[in-house]
Every structure is written in C-alpha cells, then in structure tokens.
Length: 172
Image 1: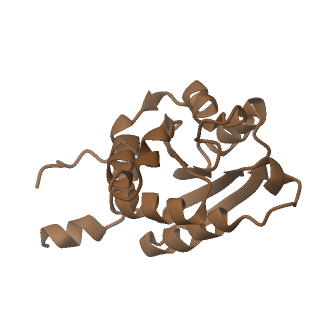
Image 2 (image 1 turned 180 degrees about the horizontal axis):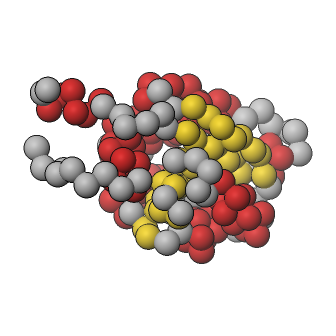
C-alpha cells in the first residue's frame, strides 16, 4: 500500500449533516445554494448527507441543532453566519457546544482565502469536535463554500478517523 492509498482509505462511510444559517433562507425568501454546494462536494469523499436543515440566525436554535446532530453523524458543516453583521452568531454557537477546538482548519481556510480576497480575514469561522463529531463553519456564499472546502476536503476523512479513535501513526 502506498502513501497515496492510505490518504483515500476510509474506515467507514462518512455521515454528514448540513446546517444552513440564514434568516431569509429559513423563511423561504432565498434558495439555499450553499447547502447544495456542500452536498455536491461531500460526494467527492463518499460522504452521505443524513440531515439537512435551514435555521434563522438565532444562537440558541443553532446550538440546539448542533447538539442534536452531534454523535449521530461524523461531520457537521454549517454555512452562513460567520461574518461581522450583528446577526452572524454561528461561531459563538459553535464555540459554546464544542469540546475541543481545531484552530488549524479555520486558519488554513482563511490563509488560502487571502490569496483570493482580502475579505477572507474577516471570517470568524471555527472548527471543533463534540461527541466524536467534527463541526466546521463555512461562509454563506456558494462560491466561498466551494473555495473553503477545496482547502480542507482531503483532510476531513483523516480527521474523522482520528476523532473516532484511529490510533495509527499520522507521520508519512
């Protein structure tokens, strides 16, 4: 088995939840193109979307849904609510429910994003673990979702394996 083979090996099928945070989307005033983009990209790692919801930008509702999904799926990807507007509360909700933060994921996304736009530095997205579920905040626009996921999609299966208890060496 080569190193490349181990990069694509999955111990189990990845289950995922997509949580779109948008006041307009939750009222049916805007089509959720970002959630659809996430679902398409997840197919590249053979992930199955088990849950999908659209909620308003309400911290208590976001926390409740993150807690509900945690432990039921391997991965929760949120889209929306990571900017600077007063209603953007996704990072705060996420930080209140995760047990361990994984700052490198958000740092990598912001760093790569700066190559495309200076506005990437304004993202407040976070990533972490709750109940053996990886939670990652993504921005709300379909283009930004695609750009962000391109940076991290290849490490998601490995991260999930480690979160689930894989004890094999990470060194190459």
